[in-house]
Length: 516
Image: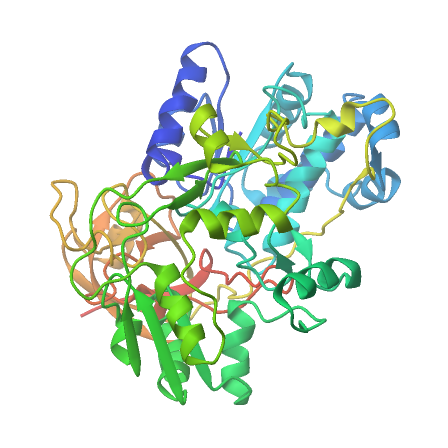
């Protein structure tokens, strides 16, 4: 299942491998509000209404249980909370799910049976699942299906969140999230925190920090007055960019460390030019499959740009802390001392093996091909995997007579995010920003292809030319975030955030289209 992912355009190399499986006989189901170029390769496309994923997943779970297709032995031995899950999904009949999702009862039943009966099955998802106000619950509802059928922790079966950017997995593994130290270790665990306090010879805060959405809320309250931004462009990547720019503009001090002079950097009091980490620095990169590989320096950075490690160590020196001048390998060895996931991954072993997958705790460990194979041990190793029941909630930005159309956002093959890394070169595939509409909507609104229109949401308005896309159903519109200097799509998006993950609901805004 490819769920909420247009991988052909957003993860093209991964999609190439996925197609190898299709050509060898795998059956592909695409679950997406748009009939994307990825869905065109699917055996079955489920064109769900935006934000109805939990209703679909729960109905599939109910059908699998009712048909006697769940893996009872696995559930009893390796999971917890099944009865509570069964109770939550019971009201999600095929008929109810069809009304909520717009997918037929027969298609939902077919997918549920096909997934449960498959010898091997994977669910791949990306931002179409996670950029919602209930992002974590969306993910939990998918994980529940894997636990229900035993499609987890076995070769060829599993859960595959496709990371939205290079080394996102590695950033999280290194502790670039507010509730974890390196190696996924909980900052609120006193014993784990003591290990880090001993290493760094200081006292560390006993509570998790703010994630990005909470940081903007703290700016609103005036609890956050200074910002240090490394390799991020929140001035153009945050939902409701009008609010984001207002809050950034009123901070006392902003430091930006980046290889580009981004819109955020233009707001900064201090800009620290950084080397390109993929070709001008030594280090490591971690893929979505947890494989850590070496990154080798191929070029010298331009004059004035310096390695991130050098910048941070020099800044520490200015603030009265002598961190020395460690090499990338020395920093990596510090990580290995502190992270059980990475303890066995010396630079030498990473070179010899072409990369290793964590957890790899010791230097005689081969790395871990499968993450959750512990669930198949007898008895299982560690705690059982919990079912996490979730209830369907519609998008926050409701459709009304004033705002009757649903806008969803995404990427195109030729561009990336806010265009910082791709806007500097041309592509024959690139046609600039448009408001993509179903041809039926164009006829209803009396607008033609290429005609500039005003797109209005509850937060603001932008102008963009119309482009017709037969992959869109009437009532659904699509835009990207690639050209914010020409069309700032995030003026339209809503910053309703998931309380568990902090992700904003980029995928579901209510809009209207006005002729000029």
